[in-house]
Image (cartoon, rainbow, N blue to C red; front, top):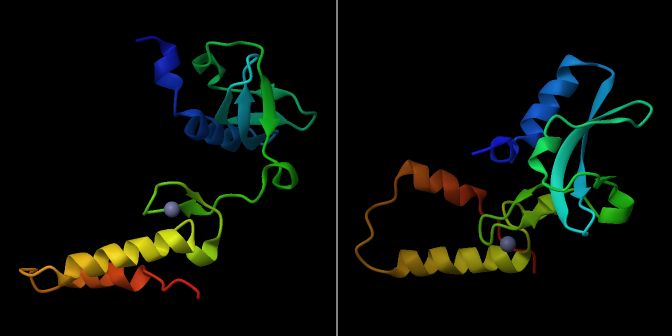
Length: 139
Ligand SMILES: [Zn+2]
């Protein structure tokens, strides 16, 4: 096990901590693009003059890649959460916790089907609080 594996998945945590400790640094989210064009979702820090300070650059086997900062005009809206039905990123807060009305409908159809199967124990309070969060899909 080398450093590469230890750093993977920690870019957000470590960059956030670095930016918090040094007020000259800004936390940046975007992609690390390797010379062969592979895009990795990534977090790093940047100074005011644009100099990149990446505490987890060691995780990338390819050196000399490009740092592409997230830009809503190029990359679309910021995700607001994760869909509990398909696991994809969700971009519309109106539809949370789903990414789309079809996932919302699919989830509701599934829970209705589960409920209609016999032998279900009486509902408990914890189940009810979950159901409250399920929104009906807009027609
Ligand atoms: Zn979904």
